[in-house]
Image (cartoon, rainbow over all chains, first blue to last red; front, top):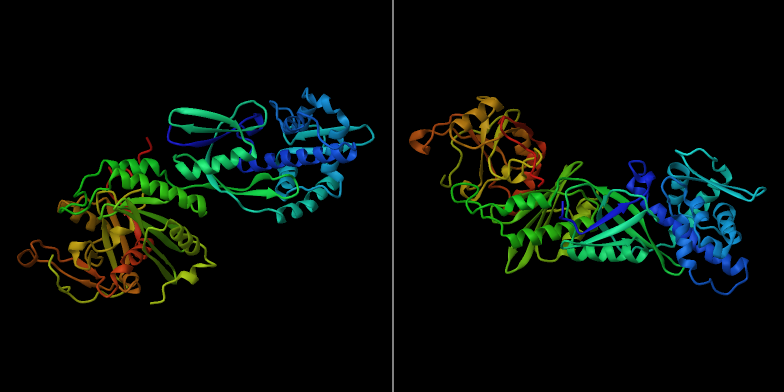
Amino acid sequence: MDDYVFGLKVKGERWQGQMPVALLVHLRGLEVLLHRHARQAWRDELDRKAVPKGFEAATKRMVAIKKSSSAIEAAYAQPDYAVYGREPMDHVLSLVISDDDADVSPELAQWVHEAILMLDVDPANDKVFVSSQRGNDVEVSESALRRLEEVGAGSAKRAERTVSMVVRPSVVDYEALTVAGTIREGRARRKFQVTADVLREAGEVASRNHLQGDDLLVRFGGVERYDDAGAVTDVTTVDTVGGPGMHARMREFEEMEDGWLGDGQGGAPTKKLLQFAERALWAMLEAVPLDRPFIYPTERGGVHAEWDLEDGTVGVRMRLAKQNLLFIGEAEWDDGESFLDETRDEKAVVAWLRAVTNPDTRDEVADHE
Amino acid sequence: MSERDPHGKPLPLDVDCHRQLADGRWAKQLGRPASDLFKPRPNDHGLLSLTDGRLRSPEEAWRFAKGRGFGTKGTSTAAAQIYADAETPVSSDPLTADRDGLDDPAHAVADFRGVPRKKWGARAKTLRRKSRITFLDPEFDPTPRTD
């Protein structure tokens, strides 16, 4: 199990089989949201020009989940909270729930509503209640949820896609900020809190080294940049990557010998070809929403990746020629076919894959001979 | 097999045609055979070997191939209509020991020679997708290695 380069550690009791991985993004969303409004509250409401030293770290800890405690309750227990006093934080929470300028993603609204936290403010008693659905305290008010849902649409419009990556999530522990990354370089591990920068770095690492592994994988489909909050970035779409393990399958082929098809036929793929092909496949998976493919050797010493579609099949053949990976694409569906002539251009392969795996666009690349 | 035409007549379109799932790396990955099993190899000269379903059941076809020493793991079955739709029509092609080196009255072939070679892979994918796959080798483990 030492064959991946990036993993996510999800920490906190709620994650232990309770919280879908897809909700990672929303915890980051909550952090972004609270941080943004805390800064705004400090500057505007308290009429101060700049936030004090330590503000960034303290506001990030607002979304810390300690053991089974609730997120914002835990923030009240943070020592740094005393630096600022309750006023801005309470204001932040009131903004989250009721202010017209609040800016909440629809995903966050849904998350708050359905899965993890319930937020409510009792202005009369100056109290904030937060509880999980497994907890007991307070139900969120319907008006607050309506507000979350209404303002969510706005933030989505101001997003731009910058990065995508595939990671494998792994298990769980108690610690602050719920999400930490581990990037494995050889046998050494580096641990991070997952911030926007780390996510970006992880995406770059994923692109450079390409991810390997045979467990469930998660594709982070995009990173949003919020233009009104000082280049805050956040992953916005998450889906799982199914299909059979690729690395173990490639390792099977390392043992092959020429003539494996019998009668002297069947060239054995080289280790270099297998390495190149696996990296190329990971790059395709990062760019195209497909499961991992079924993989077979070809009679010419290459490999052939096949994906089953609802009404068809897509295949990409890869072989090595003068240290270059060459690709051929073949696709068929109930009323059409498409072919990608041999190319070394990975981007062309990705573009073709995108087109042929999407029923709305595949006719544009269909063969009409 | 040298380049030649099939020895018999076209099969009726409603006849089942069986294809053996050869040994090697193509027969398996989680039980899914490779589409390359459904296109002729270079020495086949454009003719894909099948078994006439009127003369043998899928299991009989598999047992016959095993008896001949082929490392087959099972049988795929599709009607001749499926092959015809892929422009690879099926004809019976009985083999005799004198002429062909082995005796097989149920031998049939799907003729790929009317399809541009560039398209063989896609047609093979269609044939694989539309075939019924039956693994018959009790020792066959379609689970891939994961270590």
